[in-house]
Length: 375
Picture 1 (cartoon, rainbow, N blue to C red):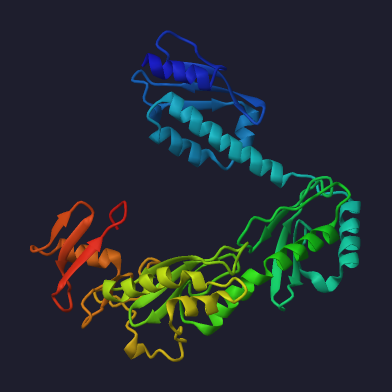
Picture 2 (cartoon, rainbow, N blue to C red):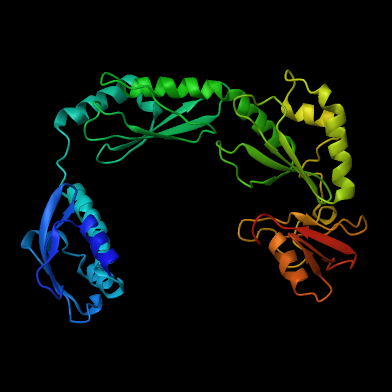
């Protein structure tokens, strides 16, 4: 009890007990540099669910619309300190929303200067602007003709304050800004960043066009990984460095051991053949001594993708990445499906993070190596 009282004093130094029984507290709760008077009446058993909260008219006005939330917090808080922390959080949100609701609009020159800036930049570069001129979307093309968007969130003190910029890039994008900067400056920096990433997007586009990309199904421009089909139930996951896109990427082969191991051996044996002057896809073909099959060539019947247990391809965002090692089977499974299946078999056994059991399809031995946590 003494520890709770000490914590309450630290968190709310302006709220003090008014009697020995400590059933009455009075003082102030602070939020955003302001103090608000309140009084809390507790029952003899000190249970918050039966307490009464008396607010000053200023606090009552700000919490208007939040009474139900405050009452709910009071019902479920284990002690007064917990409730006061909850009350402060609610008060912070209420004050923030109130400030946004009653914020003064920018002066007329804010809008006129923005319209002038857009005119200088070119209205053909404008994709979207909201009615408050607080959100602006601009477009630009890179040297390969790909269109990219940049979203700007302007602050009330623009251009004294830099706008927040949001782009679909694989690397961070920061804007160099001064009070004299404008939309033209941002757009030129955006174009320079696009030029620096052109080679990366060229590499990724070639992969997307000439191979069967299993994951992600609809990659955005910021995604640096691709899982590419190599054949029946075998694939490679690559992680491309956006700053050095033609260098050897991180590679991880997925599939049955008897198919994956030879590919790993070829990668190690031929790594000296990697030529940064060639495209990444061409280098992968040379090093792995394979041709990447296109999706149009791989027939669905020849390339089983669905899980052999749940008969689905995607399950909570995961795709089948566990494969039976039997060359006559090669059936893929979701990790969670195979885990639940093997756990339900009396013949299965577990050693540390590896489960040994039988394949649901061919009954040959199959192992499941689990990651750090259970799937």
